[in-house]
Amino acid sequence: MRRKATVRIAVDPVACEAYGYCAELLPEVLGTDEWGYPVVADPTVPPQLVEQARQAARACPRRALHLRPEA
Amino acid sequence: MPSATLDPTRPEPPSDGGGARGGTGARAAPDGGRGAPPRHGAGRARLLSCWHAQRSGALAAHLDHHGPLPLPPAQGGAARLGTLMEAAGLAGRGGASFPSARKLAALRSAGGRPSVVVNAMEGEPASDKDRTLLWCAPHLVLDGAELVARALGAGRVVVCVPDDSDVDRAVAAAAAERAGAWRAPFALEVATLPGRYVAGEESALVSHLSGGPSAPAWRPDKGAPLRIGRSPALVHNAETLAQLALIARYGPEAFRAAGHPDAPGTTLVTVSGAVAHPGVLEVASGTPLGDIVACARPVDAVGAVLTGGFGGAWVPATAMGTPYTPQALAGVGGVAGAGVLVVLPARACGLAETARIARYMAGESAGQCGPCVFGLPAVADDLDELVAGTSPAAAARLASRLRSVDGRGACRHPDGVTRLVRSALGVFAADAEAHRRGRPCPQRGAPSVLPGLGAP
Image 1 (cartoon, helix red, strand yellow):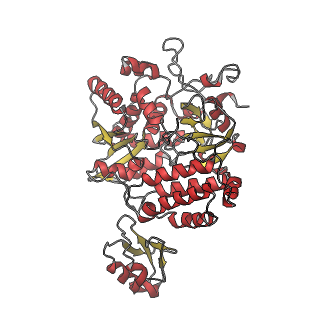
Image 2 (cartoon, chains in turn red, brown):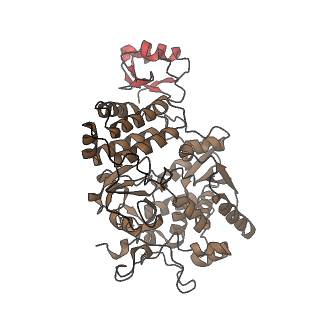
Image 3 (cartoon, one colour):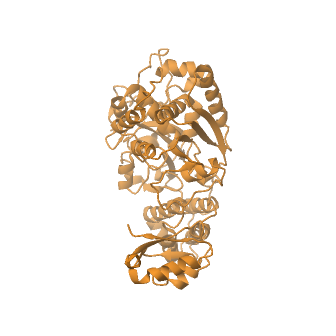
């Protein structure tokens, strides 16, 4: 049931080193700027993309992608 | 025409040998100071009113001038202090103008024995008010810190000063005097930290005091208290605490006797740039911007004023009637920030000066976040190209880069730069358009009027 809820995504800009995996794995939510750092247009991840977002967070070598339940 | 109570005030020794005690209002002479040169003002300073005492017997003179510090009661002291702050309408003087009472309340619910951090880092090159305050009235700052520390039962007070100034001597001397005079229930320390722009950002301060790097932290939950180890840290700007020391002595009503309903009290302002008398002024909040600038005697026709500092915003010469309060300044695109005003003469190029600031700010990045590390130099490059009139595409590229940098750092350092650059593109829009069409700035290469950036 919990996986149906929306989550909020946030990038820790200090940890992020622009590996770019997150934008590859979650292009619906994340783009990249001209230097390769992720850009979040809307931090709300819809329910159907939550599992994909979790995978993107796990894939980050810097553990810079954070998900938290939508407040 | 300024009203009598809104006149800028200059530090003045008490004229009658201590007769100024209790003189808490920035009271102006009946003629509103019109007869005297504006530099000397006619009002009576509060924070800077005891500056002469620094020469000898500073603590005795301080207590003689302001009277003893009314200590908060052993029980309920924090609540009482919060009530005082609220009644006075005290807001932080470090740049964010955050209500002090709310900051105190947040810390009271944090749990753990708190630490009080006095932020006098003043990394802003155009600001000199905290150093001036610590030289002129260190005991007012320490009084404010002592009030907060006693009220919260804090174990430690740390006064943070930059390592590129010698103001730590003034603080250490004042601390030694106090240690010899009474026993405080907390440890009072002076910490010298790297004198860099971002070192004074509160999470950077706390990180350094915790043994970490002097760099801002990413804080997704801004409401969570900062901690030094396990101790929740209450970080206050030096001037805020000095104002609190006056409020505790003279009461919130006296505090509100000067200033503006939106921003009660007096405030310290550092005026620099193309002026004959750069320096720190204590003015009543709400004083018209142009009156403050006039006190520093502009040497030329004023073209614009940089408000709030290098991460602030330009205000055009047409807005000099704006009351100096955070709200009113925001209404004309300005920023109160930590009380910085830099006067740009009409002959200078605001865009070239902004490019210099952007370059400086890029160099002052903590080097942590990509959008700041790469974005700020790129913004500075775009501005340089725009000013040179060599690249018709620079303006559009700059606009897109400003959007891409916005809000993407751990701290607000990059946001300060984008705000400044946007305000420059607005205030100096005619120049920007001329440069975009290929007309380079004739002032390019002229020496900067900005403090610390190649001013002669």
